[in-house]
Image (tube, rainbow, N blue to C red):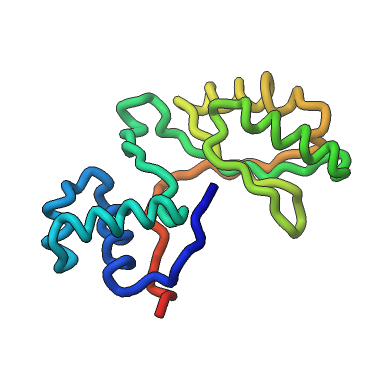
Length: 161
């Protein structure tokens, strides 16, 4: 159960910015950087976790070293967008390890997928043997990434007062 949230102040925002940049930052270093002593800083981090501002911590892996450097975005058109079909498609996407992100979108198609694979042969196998075999899929359009210009994991806090 998520606790009721109180508004973020300048220090809370700075803590979030710093932990998004380095989730393994020791509390003593974090406290020093935000101008607090370690105990109140840790209490703030725990409150941010409790209130759901911090949802978890992850390690960012090197896609090249893990043989997953080919990225493609795939527009997916479904045969039917009833609630049941959308639920079924969502579940199918959750079960495909190549799918890094899956977004239901408004506009000219139904979903936008971001997938990672080893190479174009691996992509072709994913498309032909996995995605195209899902009965709900009517049509796809793929855009293969040539160069990643910007990729952020942090959520910008610049819009906050």
